[in-house]
Amino acid sequence: MKPKILIIDDEEYMCWAIQRAMEQEGYEAVSATSGAAGLDILNENGASLVIVDLKMPDMDGIEVLKRIKKNHPKIPVILITAHGTIETAIEAMKIGASDYITKPFDLDELVIVVKKTLQVSKLMNEVRFLRSELTKEHGTMIGESPAFVEVKQLIEKVAPTDAPVLITGESGTGKEVAAVALHNLSHRKEEPFVAINCAALPEHLLESELFGHEKGAFTGATSKKLGRFQLADKGTIFLDEIAEMSPSMQAKLLRFLQNQTFERVGGTKTIKTDTRIIAATNRDLKEAVQKGLFREDLYYRLNVITIHLPPLRERKDDIPLLARHFITTLRTLYHDTTISPDALALMQQYHWPGNIRELRNVIERALILCTDNRIRPCHLPKELQNTQPVRESESQIDLPPEGINLDDVERQLIHKALERANGNQTQAARLLGITRATLIYRMQKYGL
Image (tube, rainbow, N blue to C red; front, side, top):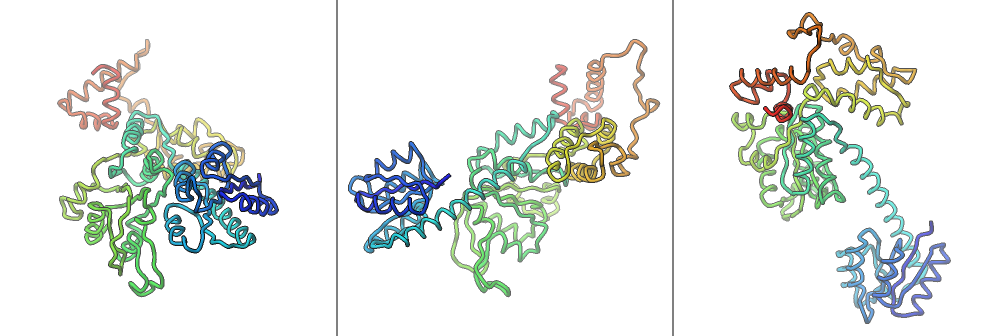
């Protein structure tokens, strides 16, 4: 489709001249001789780009710009201004104008500005699309087990707020996926999601990555660099492996959390941003506080909301869903494939020390090895192939000839576990090999 250019200028000749120049370049062009009329056209028919004169009698270009940015924030706007109003045009750039051109101007000059602005707009739209596709996939929360449903419900409740969130769980349980889901469900979803692994960088580099640095701040700092907090302004920053942060960096992070301000390394100017903090760790932060390895005040700042992700061994009912999800995700790289019941059974018997990350790697490996579009036990790693199911002789429950009611058995086991644990739900869940959330769900199911 041809880009559509909307020209708003109270001088009819100027509208005609610009419209003709745009059409000669192959663009579709329409014009209006007042701000109100131009906004009506924009609201009804849309536009790829708007050119608006700064000085107009009924509604000046600044007011038109403000209304466009409020109702159509992604449409670029070019201002036409006289020499005496350049300062106003610069102020308009701060409001959201993409560029400005001063009178008198050559139409060829305006065409160049329009082409450049449309190219930038196209690139920005592509970036938004790719980011949305990436976060759409990356933020997919797969699972229907009671323990995981509880996690998803908590994410849905917490996401619309700006409260800091601490995500805990073993390595590979999907903490970054949960962080992306929080971002995608928040009012910040159109803004950046910026992630950094605090364990991957030494202290001096981590400070520079988070807060940025000025030119000459240290050896090798040949230019000014914006930090992750500034890049995540109006959006979300995800601090993975927060427990690995040094005491000095913990103090700097605490200050940021208190007032959302910081200084770049080597700089003196205080910079303020509006950034939501999501942190994650696979360690027990409360224990780290008790050992003096993590600041208590920072812990309570981060721990406003805690979301704990259960390990995969505690949500084995979700393994078929996750396996099929990864097959669907990876089939564009390999081929359309199914998974045999025997292979799936081995997966559900395995203990998955690497959690979801390990499962994804196992699926990708199997897709590479299988040649008949069906994942079988032989395509799985040896540690999964050697997984042995519990033999019937090892079971403590006899199956009578007339059969049993499984719900009755489960109800009795839960009742006995609660009795042995003196009503302590956490201990009872441990005796049964399930999470507390799963125990509570099943207690409610059976009216216990």
